[in-house]
Amino acid sequence: MTIKVGDKLPQATFRIMTADGPAARTTDELFKGKKVVLFAVPGAFTPTCHRNHLPGYVGKAAEIKEKGVDAIMVTSTNDVFVMDAWSKATGGAGVIEFLADGNADFAKEIGLSMDGSGFGLGTRSQRYSMIVEDGVVKALNVEEAAGKAEASGAETMLGQL
Image (spheres, rainbow, N blue to C red):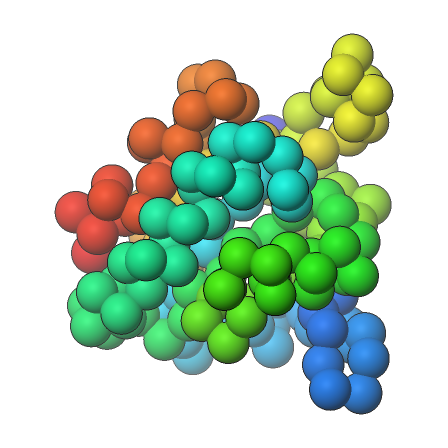
């Protein structure tokens, strides 16, 4: 079943890169007591994700945070090392938190995984964005087509805040 507005995020563990190397962070650690903008991409460095989706959030980060948002996070079904490299390559490091969902456990749990095996990508996350307050989904925007980042983009998110 797909997550919907009003649902609490399920318990899941992401991997993040820290100064000491990869570390695990749970949904409770990341979302409890915070207002968070979370967006997901099918893959780091893939064309729409790299050239369109992430840059919008990096560019609008200050405006988003001015709306009372504690953190902006991006998740993808890449490993923590790829996500770390992507954060550095895009100027997103220190602006956005990069959450690795390497086995797509979170994407599957919220019902927003997709089969990218026809393109050699395996199981991936659908492209979406959400506003999460204290672990509860307050807004959810799922893209109809993986190659677009409009409904889930930063401009749409700003309008919902």
